[in-house]
Length: 176
Image (tube, rainbow, N blue to C red):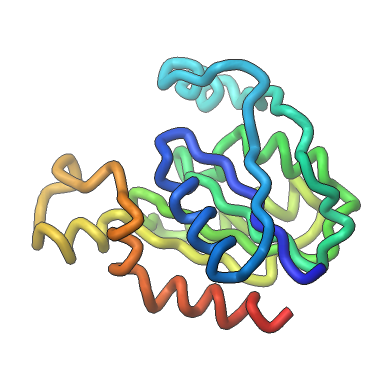
């Protein structure tokens, strides 16, 4: 099978992106679910102590797919810890992968950090990394604003503002 979309979302933003990409790619989606409830405080502790929370087993066999598109938030420059846990459990079973995220902002070196996270977790460098920053969405919708006034929750309609990036993802993965 060509592609599987695997996503994790705490706020719902990357769920919207993951579902949209799966529909556009005509690909199945698999959701990463933490084994226990997550809160902002538990996420803070994960970041502080570099903890990897337990997640439920993936409900799809990644080795049955030619390519896995991982979709997850970025927390403190790194792929969200529940996704990193899930990716580590797939090590050696992924043939090729890419990564996409709806993230707050893009920091210098961000793609390199994500590439390192993926390579470390899966043992395989991503073919592509796409960043869809909410700072760009906020500028398009509200004009120039301070970072604290940034749009934090997206709707499916907001994805229109990322059409060039989403079209690039579909072009890169749709031909597999």
